[in-house]
Image (cartoon, rainbow, N blue to C red; front, side, top):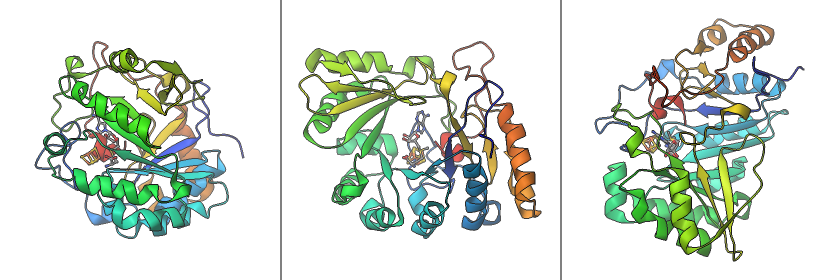
Length: 329
Ligand code: SAM
Ligand code: SF4
């Protein structure tokens, strides 16, 4: 079948699926303390519906699937979905992004169901600061989950993602560098994007990848690794050969030009960009028994209009209504 391609000639090969908009954390840069109104149960796609969309997309060349949320591990019986997706012929890889809180419980089941890569979000390695950022006193639990995961050779390399905030993350750099150098984890810093629940993002709060790189490089020289096509992270190797560290710089160095990603929200809407202001409803046609050919056409039409780039920092930029947790980061 013809490769799914957008109107700017980009081949779409990566799908992020939000399996729930709910979360057991309330990270400052993502959700307000009181949470946001959750979707009703019947609004959420069933596992069968998700597998149907993934199957249709995979047949068009969207081979890589990442499960996210909200917090994906709070959705009941998630390994069942993983097994359904990994058994689809055209799916090449199923990965997951999690806050790690439930990994101690679920790591084994997820690895056995076929999760190929894990990204675990950890923004601070100090208990009180972790609490301040996530509003949950959960660092020890997350670190236990990481240890449990690290026991599985199939789960490596394990990536640790930290959102970088000016006035906060600078003090975390030495500990994260130590982690990257002393363990098998690959640490990546992500620039703060305007997708926060409180709509309080400002450019001044963005601690850029270049600034972080300079902080690290001054102590431990870094050598760049070649960038893989469509990669979000710029990855560096420590010059003395001990470990790697990455920087995801969507604000200061956008990587839209070879973006190969689309997203499916928990309520079945297709988003062609994190910053899309319009979405395409797939749930209604799914529930009205649309054929694969009909879904194929709806998807191709939506993807054709995929945004050329995000416009953060440009005059007239409008932050989407959905937060990162409701989009599926
Ligand atoms: N709950 C899971 C987690 O935290 O890993 C998965 C969903 S979360 C929305 C996915 C990723 O988005 C996390 O790494 C999180 O740190 C990141 N994120 C959330 N809000 C963000 C923002 N405003 N800017 C940059 N990254 C953000
Ligand atoms: Fe939850 Fe992840 Fe958002 Fe934090 S970043 S509130 S863990 S969805």
